[in-house]
Image (cartoon, rainbow, N blue to C red; front, side, top):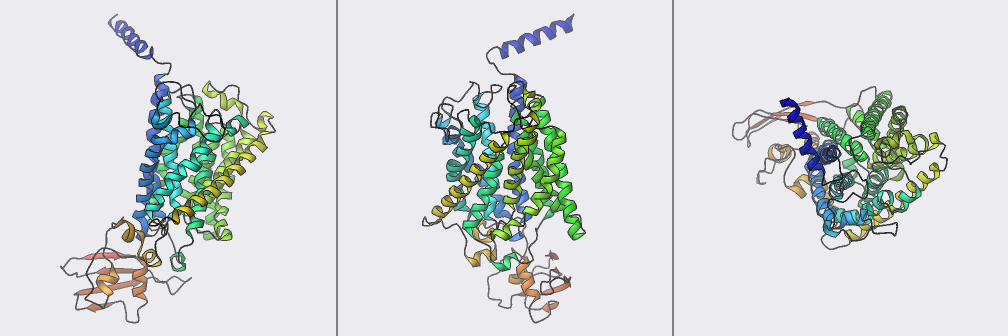
Amino acid sequence: MVLTSIINASNAILKKRQGDTPFNGGDVSFIIVASAMVFFMIPGLSFLYSGLSRRKSALSLIWVVSASNAVCIFQWYFWGYSLAFSPTANNGFIGNLANFGLINVLNEPSPGSPLIPALLYALYQMEFACVTVGILVGGIAERGRVLPAMVITFFWLTLVYCPIACWAWNINGWGFKFGVLDFAGGGPVEIGSGVGGLAYAWVLGRRQDKELQNFRPHNVSMVNLGTFILWFGWLGFNGGSAFGANLRAIMAMWNSMIAATFGGIVWCLIDYRLERKYSMVGFCSGTIAGLVAATPTAGFIKPWASVIMGIFTGAICNYATKLKFLLAIDDSLDLFAEHAIGGVLGLMTNAFFATETVIGLDGVNTNVIGGWVDHNWKQLYIQFAYIIATCLYTFVVTALIVHYVDTIPGLSIRVPAGSESLGLDEVEIGEYANDYIEVWRDVMEPNLTTALDPRESTLDTITCAARRSQPVSQEISACNFQVNDNMHVRESDADEKPVELEVLQGRRGARISVIA
């Protein structure tokens, strides 16, 4: 009897709380959690990019992704949300400033879904924009200045991301009215960041030849950590795009898991065929490619279609990494191959395998039909036209933004050649992802009048030391150092000698190990 009274009282409280709002508390709670999961993708991107870069520029990529997140939050609050999702704009291309500064954005049903309030929808979509610019700024890897990148980020969000998001998701956008099927951002997020990153890298120019030789990621553990943080966040990215705690959200998560799994396996097997090694970087790259392809498809297709998509996405994106050589564009982090190509493959998958049985699982979009499996033959050219428009617009406008920012005094987009050799961590940030001594400056440098700065040891300086005419193993009495070397010469290039050095006695008697 007491238990029944407690239950009735609890139900009465819940009904009273929900009486003032048309929204289900479970749906709202789910999207709040999903927003936090998507936000967690920012450090995931930072770690991924940092691990993929050379050690001397690792922290600069963490910084630029983190700072671009801050710029995006300001832009989205200032006018980004209004330009993308203002429901009163009817030009089909970009929104107006009716919701400038989140004016009139509170508890009315959101323009994207009646299941959640507009204020929550604005927050969730802001995280999408943050992830997109985080991917984009990877285009500056190892040679781009960070301050101009922040200026470019603001203009890019305003002139590229907001219009494309309006096309696909605004109720008055031309893509939305045209019938484009883009679940969580194959166009605004993936093509936007991938093609935009390619255009950024094109205007920025190639790294110096010596920076391209013998290049390898400096920390594969960070690559793996970043990938799995991204995978976790992607479940909120794709699952939350159902805008409610419903079966469509669960289906989106299943499709994301399946596509990522098969993408990673296929990429790794292709690399094994060539190298006879099970590449961790290859597995992570394929996993991300699968997740990218799942972004536009997760809430439209059945799991068996995700298996097919994951397989051909892993293979095609793997081979697409060679396009940067054909295009002669230094896309150092393969933004185009993974995000742009993966996004295109996902959008085209919708043309064939999207089905109304999955789309209607949210209980809202029950009248939307899919692609060829639903005998909707025209969906193929709809998707294709959307892809072409998005790619062309993104590349041209991004290239123009980067070019014109570069002409502004003080905002040169690239560091000088000497600074590139030193590394962006020393030149732009003044801090390092890993603090260590510099062997050339503190051990091998014969000019003892040089100011001592026991901070950095790069592969270039150690290799340079290994090429000196005198043996590397020697007693440097002036500095009281004894340096022992253990060289491992690669058969493919006998001139490059990665060196393992152990400093037995330092200036203060410390025992220090340096490995490069």
